[in-house]
Length: 167
Image (cartoon, one colour):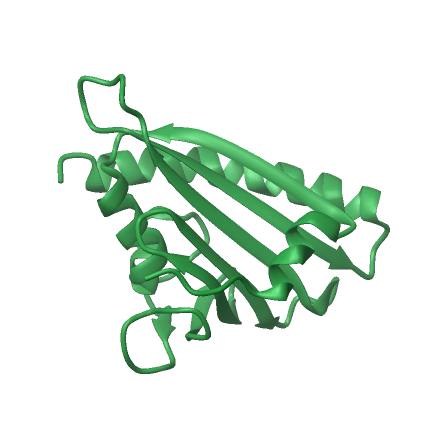
């Protein structure tokens, strides 16, 4: 079930820093969506810098408004889900972290998933978008995040395919 869009999703289009990275991943769309959007602890298996200590902090199945704590890079990131469209889109806002250069409530990540139909083996086009505001100048933080996103995406795709590609 798709929830109505959150006005906070507008930040994806208006933030001072906006980045997008896409990749083709040799994993089925449903499996890829599950490990990215539904299973926080799995991030520790495929996303560089993350641990398996990540978890949902609200009960029930994940949905708009659900909260989770992600453990990465030696700190906790407390997040709220802004969009949860089963198999298609997962968006969250970082509510709290100990990263001093990010403004509170000023980092939104948007993940979208599309099956690659012309492939003999199951593949998914995943797009990872980031929108941020920082205490640093946008050009400085934007350059850092662009490099960060590029390195993480490359490592994540390789690990996702190796771990989940046959399911």
